[in-house]
Image (cartoon, rainbow, N blue to C red; front, side):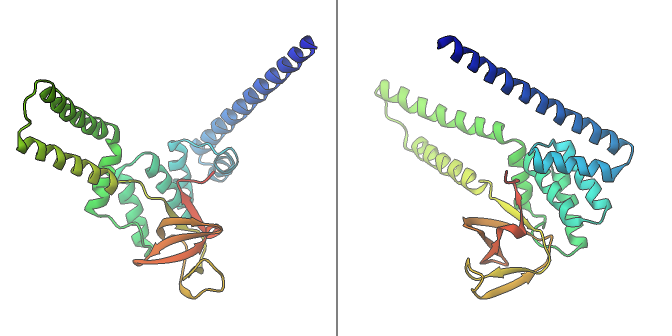
Length: 247
């Protein structure tokens, strides 16, 4: 019986390993073929493969995101172009990409891509997230060790240093709360209804066309609670391209 179970386990293990190997090989082949088509400027065939990798395999590299955006822009599909640029920016925050999206959105009179000092600071924060986090943690540890050593030596901590430490903690908390990533989305279809409540029978607030970027606040069944012109409204999920991409 043990021998039988052992063979079944080995068979299952090798089958799983082999299927995983075949899948990896197939994905690698698709990527190589897509890159070859892109170099040959056979963009239609390249796009078909990139879409398969993205939507079916759920795997794509930053380079593919940029190339896919480039192809869509050439086809005049500005919504998809902005979507893939936004995905690229989500993984690799690049100020030049923000400028590119802003210029494209301005051309088609789209909202949600405006450049600002806040977005520039957010880009800087995302680029140096680990370094900034490390510095803040080091400062907190330094302050904590300082207080402990003073306590061990039975020496009082000067009031100004206590205040500075508390102010520093407050600033760090404010910084991280300010730059917490907020889920976004791009309207994918024209004549998209924005409703006052998560119901098809609720009051219609506005009708928007594709391409606008919106902040997603909450997930409610088949609806998203989003912000539009400073107002909370509801839109069907099927009419939104999620950033980051929902697998």
